[in-house]
Length: 140
Image (tube, rainbow, N blue to C red; front, side, top):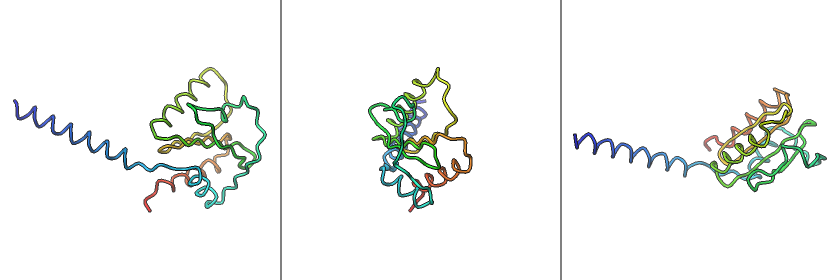
């Protein structure tokens, strides 16, 4: 009985250590990383945007204000959080803010410490953005 208990404690300790190591190995992306991977995929980022401050896709989330671009006449918001955990809190905050609102068609991309919103139903561009962002996390 004691051997089984010791084995279980050891197994849980090893799994927790592996999980913690995996979290530490997670890449931390910068705005420059995101801009580079998108432009390398031929996605034009136009900084000229004229959006109302009330636009939910450009509002601050947990202290982070996004960089906002115009991509094919649609809004692209890029939030760079300090960690994946902060990103999760940010998306949770977004969901709280918009729970009762009717918001326009959009796509959210979550990866490590970044959160990206593309406000459009253009599936082709949504797929291009996904492919580009996935390259961020690809092994070098």
